[in-house]
Image (cartoon, rainbow, N blue to C red; front, side, top):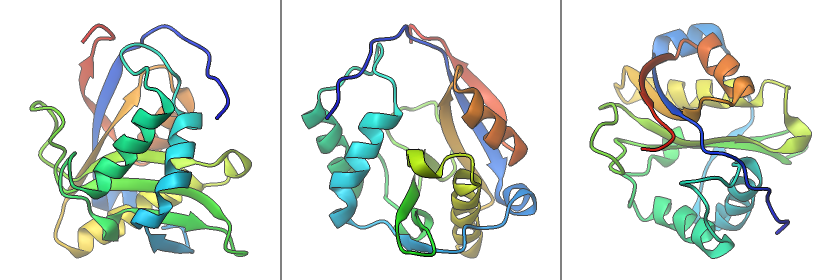
Length: 180
């Protein structure tokens, strides 16, 4: 894996949206399948490339792989494959992924709602609607099982993600300072 540049820590924003608002704002991505353990290698690579290495998140490669494996072992909450779509192009190429747990157990102060652990669009597919379409596909699956909201956390300096999430109806419910 390529090395990553160190950056300064930033605030983290917890956001929540009604699944109906998400579905009104975006159509679900048309080509999806559920995430499966066989996806761990490429998911770990996508996580490694997508998230800046900065305090307090400064893992080694093996940590990223172990964290990805732990998701499928329900260590962050009950993993929801039905609400964790892998987005595919018409040619079957992976474009992105959203991973969701029933309730995130990593912190006690997170919303009591299905929780997006990761929303990653692979570089060749950015700015094509993959992220909003996969969040909408996840919201559709959550609505089908009776859920009304979904939550996520985003870095305060991730302007592209904040724009997408705000357009989908997510609102800030908590801000965690960089030092927390």
